Length: 388
Image 1 (cartoon, rainbow, N blue to C red):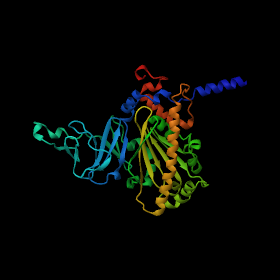
Image 2: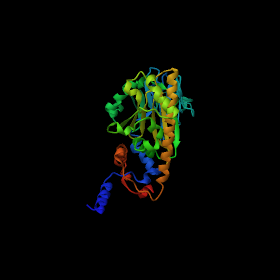
Image 3: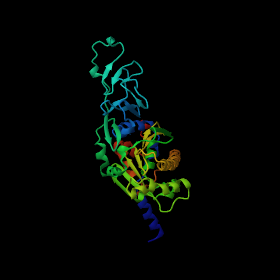
Image 4: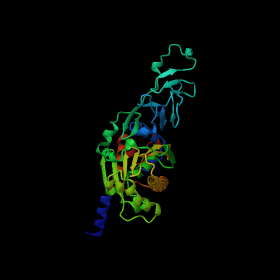
């Protein structure tokens, strides 16, 4: 076979490889609105951990596009979810997190609700002749509790969270998520990248050896040990036998096996990374775990929202490994933010054409196929007129 024939066959093989999404879908306001409506609103979204709201009246809020919801613990200990909107004139009721000891009171006109959402009063009640308070309680939001976290869904009828995760959720059992407590407040950070670029990045570890040298010094790439169910994927990075020469990384490697004695021995020396479409990541370490969500914040911007949780443990050595773990992960997150921003800028070039995807980017392809299924315009090489 001639060199020309070999080259031609190689070109033909390359052309059969799946391709990345077109650049225009990563910076388009009209598409963002459709993504909220068709992708994110009909999916389960984490609000917080059950132990983030341990007492009656404790609440946490969550915003998704124009929507805001609250979850709170009622006097009877049950957890309820409501739209965070007064039934009178639509004012937002609560912000962030906190405690409503007895009632929820609108800051605008003083309409007041019980923790079960029922309307109990309003100033100058006689000015609303014939008003039936029973018809003006807070509107409920569909909620689900799985592996210690409170999820909400704002549209559609997806299966319960536990059914979506299937047998992958069983891998959480030794870590005892339900017993964990927050190690800090829910955080939010704006990145100068489209939310899909950030999710693409989390769904593939092809970039880890180059993009995360510290992680690669400590662990094998998680693409060497993977599992999945439809819509949920898991990769495991195993700690290398040789300690990293960097002090924080090497010290963590040496300490963690003894500190995390509550876990089976093999799970003391691995980091686990889970992703659930369309926008959730869960990282599981021997010493703690975290979740993060990637939320649209306008064209070319996203909000990274997340929290860190661990079993109650005041030992000095546990505090030390959690500090080291957080230090290492902060570096990894900073690297991801920097890498994603470079992609966002590069996609603005008119020279870019969607490149071929590696087999190591298969879960990213699953994400792209979901986007194409829900929003057919994703398959177009350029934006249609109504999106231009």
